[in-house]
Length: 259
Image (cartoon, rainbow, N blue to C red; front, top):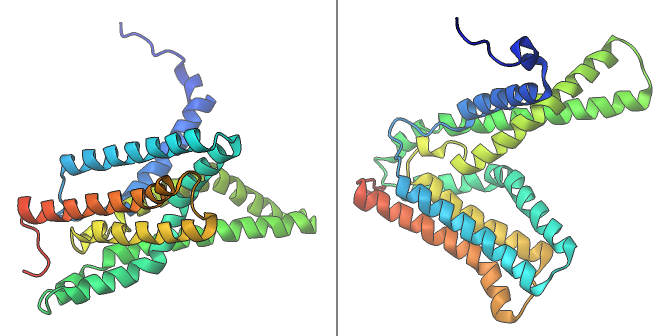
C-alpha cells in the first residue's frame, strides 16, 4: 500500500505553502514576460561564472570598506537600501537610457544589417510595455486605495478596491520585484535584437549609476585612493567583464556586428 503524504490536504492551507505558491506564480509569469533571450541566444557558463564572481567580490569589497572606514550601523543599512534601490531603479533608467543606446547600436551597424535589427525590436518593446503596465496598475490601485480610505466610503467600489489592493500586496509586489530583477538582468530582452546588445547596455547603465551615486551621496569614506577605487571599481570591473564578454562572443562564437 503506498505511503500517505505527510500533512494531507492541510498543507494546501498552510502559510508556507501559500507563500511558495504565490512566489512560484509570480516567478513563472515574470520569467515568461521578461526572460526571452531569442532563438540564437548564447549560453556561456564561463561568462555566467565570471559575472557571479565579480558580483560577489564587489559586494565583499563594499562590506570591507564599510567595516574598515565607517563602522556606523547606519552605513550598513544605507548600503543595503542602496543596493535594493539600484535593482529597482535599473529598469527605470533602462526605459530612459536604453532607447538611446539601442539607437546608437543600430546606427553603428552596417546599413544592410539595420533593417534586420529594427525588425527584431518587438520583443524589447513588449517587455517594456508589460513593465510600464505593471507600474501603472500598481500605482493606480494604490492611489485609488488612498483616495477611498480618505473618503470613508463603504460601498461596492470600496470593497472592489480593497480586494485589488490585497492582490497587489500579495501578488503584485512580488511580481514587480521579480520583473525589475529580470528586466535589469536581460535589459528588457534586448538579446532578441542582437546578442551583443545586453553587455553594451550594461556598460552604459553602470556608468549612469556611478554618476548618480556621486551626485547623490558624494565620495565614500576613506583615504583618497580608497575613495576613487570605491567609486570607479564597480563601473570599471563591470565594463571589463562586458568587454570581455563581447570579445568572447566574437572570437569563440563568431558573433559580430559590422560583418
